[in-house]
Image (tube, rainbow, N blue to C red; front, side, top):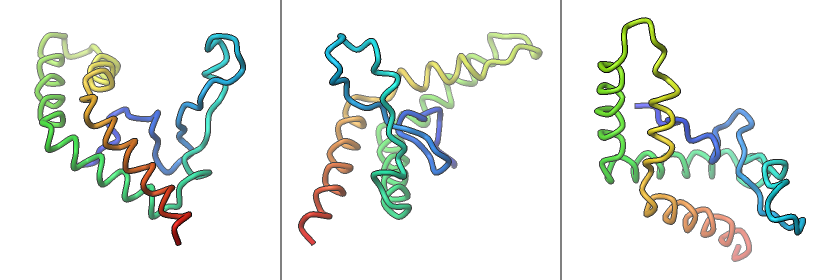
Amino acid sequence: MENNNGINEIGNNDGASINGGNTDGNGGANASNKRIKIEEILTPDEVKYIFELLDKLLWESGWTEGVCKRAQEIRESHDEDTDVYLDVLAFANTSIPRSVHLELARQIHNVLSSRHQS
């Protein structure tokens, strides 16, 4: 099962990005302008590793099954002509467990730190 379930802030191999930190002192007004392409910080093998880990974590947490079930419920509550993609995407993006975010951040940190130990 492909898992880029709308998680484009983390990225994929076609130029997706990670939100950068805001250091301009304006309370975050320009935060959306600060993006880093994932390819600028991770190698293709590292990106593959992170996405495999993401798939695994989401599956183990029950998120994947939960999103599929909720997507079906959303589809059933609309008529056949209604595009429910954005509703499903919104649910998917807001329902990722915090523990998954934290584990991904830890693993990305480990990947980047391991470069300095070599």
